[in-house]
Image 1 (cartoon, rainbow, N blue to C red):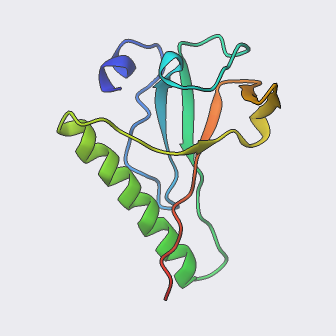
Image 2: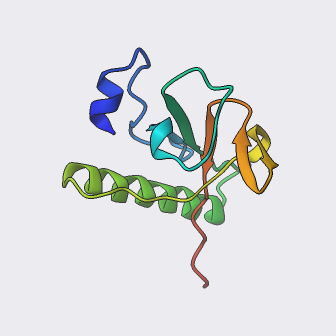
Length: 118
């Protein structure tokens, strides 16, 4: 993944998550089982959505911590040359055709981590 990013015109996107837990990675289109015929790049952009709240919300802080843990696990796998696995969803950029998800652009989203039960 890192080598792929070095050979694109896109800025590196595997960067430290924002204060809200948002981060993005580039995923080679050929590595994804999802079709994206309208995407004219070799890469799909996979985004972890931000977690925001009004005020100092404990649930939001916990969600941000979990997103950073996902990022840290991915970085550890990357640095140790292990396969990186994650679940995605197409959100508003996908439609289902003949049982297959087709993207209308280059964007996917990470499935957000589930908060542990108290």
